[in-house]
Length: 127
Image 1: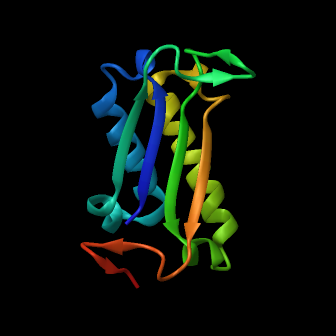
Image 2 (image 1 turned 30 degrees about the vertical axis):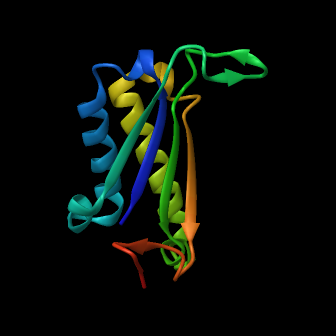
């Protein structure tokens, strides 16, 4: 299952939750295909004012930070670099489409590839 966590300053996130979940899910589907839609898990973490810092200073206007968990095999394929590039671009586009172009330049996307046997569901290791 593709898992996304988007950390967004609460002041930017408020009122945009549904649209952001839809846009991020659609970005993943654009890369993986329609079969993935029902498997995409999106968690939005709204960061309260005063709790996001950049360069040692409070930055309530910081751009979102997205962590995308996926299986290592997806990036080990011959087209793995293309998949990574499409995910980073698509997720960034999704954020900008909902939160505005001002968010694009600072949006960070971290792809976290997990090797086989390192995730579980319902108390069982996933293959």
